[in-house]
Image (cartoon, rainbow, N blue to C red; front, side):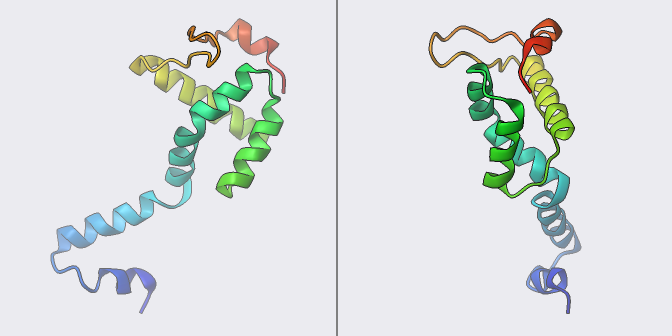
Length: 113
């Protein structure tokens, strides 16, 4: 039997089996990457505010979470998470002064790689 079939063996209703299988899928692949990135976002943003290079932050993220992001993928996730948080009102603040960090396109141009 496959590992999925083994995991579903103790679950009796089709709806429960479906939900369990989908929950497992969420913990794998792209969803896991997005969940890991959201978890690490605040720490990443704090270091990027201190002018840490994005490449270094990406390498440390990959090593810590066992992912293989490229720099363009890292930037895409970073920008998407910034937009998502801005839309929900969860804006990053400087750990030193507590002021909101503005991530405007003009500021993006000045960020280090």
